[in-house]
Picture: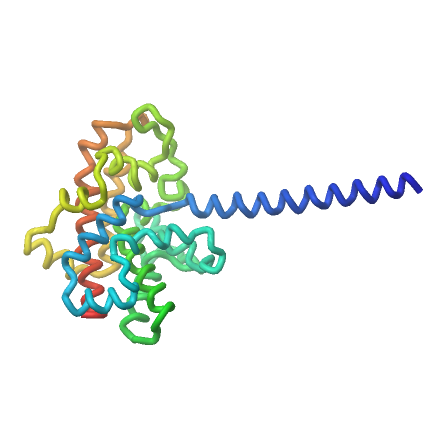
Length: 273
């Protein structure tokens, strides 16, 4: 009788341990997904948003202020990373990036059935132009669009696949363990010790000729540009990265954030301006 009671207690304890392990595994999986890719870090995304605000039409600015309930584009820009742990947005987890292997175009590459950054941007733009959403649903899609336009301009978000956009490429950044994706997301930017407003002001607005050319490019052109920078991105030598790497390639970071800002403004002006 005592043995049966002991067995029952043991089974209950084992069950509790299993349930706790399953919960831990779910948390770790969520963390794994959330760490796969964050686009530009907070400073980069918000600088992009601030640059976009400077190029909005008066009408678009007014409409977006209404839709976002007074929140700025800059502050909105990081929302899609901030909700990674919300399972109600699980459908959008893979929207932050796209895989296009070397030697292939997006059209030739195998598509992710869960979506990708190119398909998501094109879909959201079409939905917002159609006027099919309002209220909270429209606000969510605007926030997604703002973030994803930033993501697609980060070269490693148009990745080759096996290394998970550089997340699996272990490097040293000024003697600290890091990975290639993190270096491009945030570490080169954070090393400047600038606020997002200071960073945006430092980048500034492009010349009119550049503005016209950049805003004429399509979403798929943006992705092709990111692919074109892969050779430079992966030029990390022995993996001990620091001043030399930043000196050679930080201008690409500045350029891509500047381009994403003015292009986001152009898209928003087309929808709301």
